[in-house]
Image (spheres, rainbow, N blue to C red):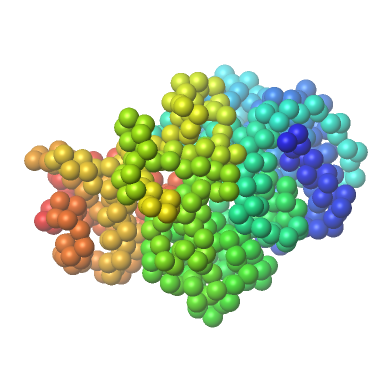
Length: 507
């Protein structure tokens, strides 16, 4: 592989110039328009001395300008670095210090924060995203000169804090992006220009810049980008645009299924409905099946390109707790503490290797060596492989609750508790216990009237007694979430660290 995302854009701009590449909530940009628009912005970056290997930051909500800025950075040979637009100056400064961008595009509402970060000592040029990028739209720009790309050049950095809170920059190269898209196209074949992706997650995530923008451009598809996740609007786009691909955590599918009119909507054109980030409740599968959609559980991490395994449409109904086999070119192992492959059904750490495996964390050799020891991505997740080689996710290694020497999986409890009447959202976190060291507490956002005693009784019928939560905490409002849509358990652990002093035990 010697090409880049930019090469793919050039190809499609020549062969299907009028085909839409991005539909931003009705504002459509074609391949020819994106090619020329990004040429204009890339020329401006080159005039500022920005070139191969430099980092270009982008901070702002989902927009056409965000996408064009990323493509323009790629056209100069620079590395696109998306920043969370909700970050305060201190949080943003940590990422700026890590990647040292030459320039940062900022939406109008982020400019004050960017100037604050720069004034604190960081050296970079602040560019108004709307003014600089928007001014180049609709003008015929000459092609920007090509750069000498190497397949292993970094082309994007996606920042992930995971459960630790420590920012790490996952590096994507031209080779890994091509590998991710190629493997996806083998497992989920789609005719050229027929790919239609609905993206409601932020552009600065891997779901946005890699699985949304880069994949759509490489495959000649269309990314239907939304400013934010709005369930009624998402259902409307799914239906009217005949979306073929929609991926995200269970909450996206749950909220779309709650929209009035969902039960009367046929969605059988949605052939790739992948659900990740948490176990998929069986009732959720059953709500989408009559709509002609098979929700399929996946497993992956940003460090493997986003997705490593996906359940088949046929297998999803038979094995709702399984995440599938590895992709056509991805291998999956489950190993014990000594690195030996576990027997079928035995819990161990999930290891991955495939074309989307990242080369390392940006300027963090220690973390890279730890994650990639032995040539495999050590995920830090626990899982099992059955006799057929199907993967089942158990939990994060660091999130297992050790109650008196007995290990408890929060994910297992959450799957059971989510079936209790009155439970809207649930997260199980450890809290201190004088006798057992720590014990599970169920933090619940109620969807109706919550009966803690009934919840405990429900769990008693389905779980060993030591797994049943000793505390049921009614959380005020929706549970906090990270940009990926996953529940922010780190925040909940901090908020309820003193739960035994504030809440009564329910058993």
